[in-house]
Amino acid sequence: MSSTKSKVYFGSVQQGKLLPIASFAAKVDKITDILIEQTPIAKKDKVAIKMHLGFNVGYQTVPVFFVRRIVDAIKKTGAYPFITDNPTAVYNAVNRGYTQETCGCPIIPIAGVKDGYTTPVEINFKGFDKLDMGGVLKDADVLIDLTHAKGHGACGYGGAIKNLALGGYSGPSRWMKIHAVAQRDKYWDKEKGSPEHAKKLVEACPYGALRYDETYDNLIRNYHDCHQCLTCLELDLDIGAVKLPRESYSAFQEMMAISTNKVLETFKPEKVFYLNFALQITTFCDCVGVIQPPIINDIGVLGSKDIVAIETATLDLIKKEEIIEKNIPPFLKHVNLDPNEDIHPFTRLHGPYKDPYETVRFLEKMGRGNSDYELIEILSPEETAKMKPSEKVFEGEPSFF
Ligand code: SF4
Image 1: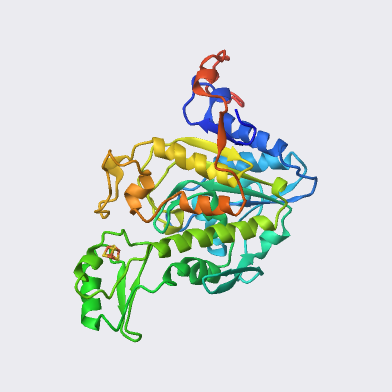
Image 2: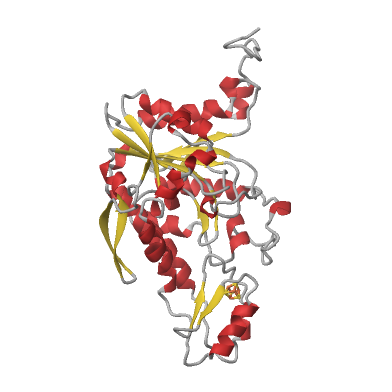
């Protein structure tokens, strides 16, 4: 085994025996302990646990059951953990079961109660000079990137990178810069197209991803909703007014790598670790705020000190799974289920320009990690199958009868 490989610890949801010590919870605890041991957390360090706490009726985030265990494990080091996310998610987190009482630590808005407590970071990318990073991250000594792995409409995948890339910034930076970067490359030529032609394209788009702005005579594409079905290009063949630039999709992925890198630059590398929960893997992101049927079966938990390695490993494990076809959203009409094409399930769902590995590759090129990883399974089903059963107590500790 090459010593240059990054270690990724993995705990499967499958267990070899029906015992608490063989359970998924035991695996989460063990992987958390391994990562804490590899992280120099000093007494009284302020430990930011960056999560997405969901929105509205979207409850498929990292279960509070595990959050509490991770918080308790950090507290044992003598440090002070707190959970952080955007102010809206924090404000109504109680609706999805996240409170100081249940999580065991405070839940703090990442950029203050008015989303204005920020610190500027220079990026100079596609005409954007800076982003406003959540000031709370700057204040913290340690970062735990605690993530729910799932699909994403704009880039195919939402994992540890996206949790920092967007979740680490104030609302205006998230929406008017990071997401908006996809709009930088010109794709509508008003000299060639007419308002009538633009309206025809809007009507033809099966995903409602196009709208026409009368005031500016502009056709605007929502890249999150666009499934690259090519209908607009086919209708425009003889006119040549509209484009579907591949680089617009890449720009968003590169921007996410840049913004993540900026968050990580504010921490000493050894003071950061990552946990990805590949459970309730849905087609779209938690930030949509709706309940969705899982599109991939539950896999387990991954933990690493290397963000590139953990994201690559998570995507690789998801790729090994088959899409649960009956759970494909009925409004997705262009899902590619051709078994002869070796593509990731998230690319099958979201279209060929939404490559879930792309932002990971950008981050690796920035020197932020290593996609060559060693997957170390913790308490594997084979190992736990050999465990000696302890005395079964179904209603013990405490017993009330
Ligand atoms: S490629 Fe398809 S989904 Fe995308 S904007 Fe054009 S018509 Fe809409």
